Image (tube, rainbow, N blue to C red):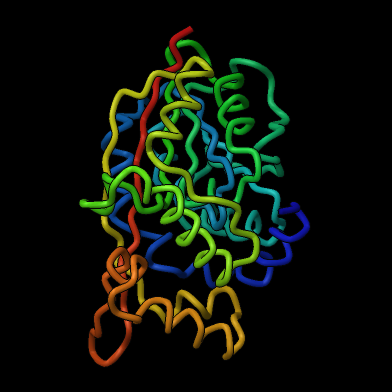
Length: 266
């Protein structure tokens, strides 16, 4: 998965993501702020900021925040959001998540929300986060996670890998720039390997309206119908995991979001 594919997917969708309720004010946004407990003297970095919602949530609570992304259209939305909310300490900057253009120990807080499943080298991303964090700094990650024994009770160990592969294939069908959603266990392992100690984890269920979910990625009708069938076919692992239901005549389903907060130990 290349940066070009990401920008091709998300450039035309920038406005839709700016207006998307899940990204703009989803429950995980308030929760990650609560878990981090930001301080007014902190310098913060939000990686793969999209339309800037996470950066904007932290901006009033810290000294400064950089909203970074590789997609110019997303950075334009983030800049517009900062202007709309009069967040003078929030700036936008182009940055690649796995090769950050910042000096070592530059930030007290690094955040990344609902974006890491697009990164082809997630361990390299975590290593970069650790590098730019100051000792005692915090890393806050929010991302979708695949089925495992924590997100789908009753799933046995030998079923976890094929279930995760099935889920990631489903996500990639809707969005070709999707790389892989990692499990909580995998994220913890990468953090520990790169000097970050996970201090708290939360798991949330996120309701998705099927129509807007496919429309944001400009899916053609045949792909929409395939995705709908995958969601609604009873008796499958995906159907059990996604919990489809009708609300006011429209298809809805659930995803799982994990929130991890880790401390830079040295």
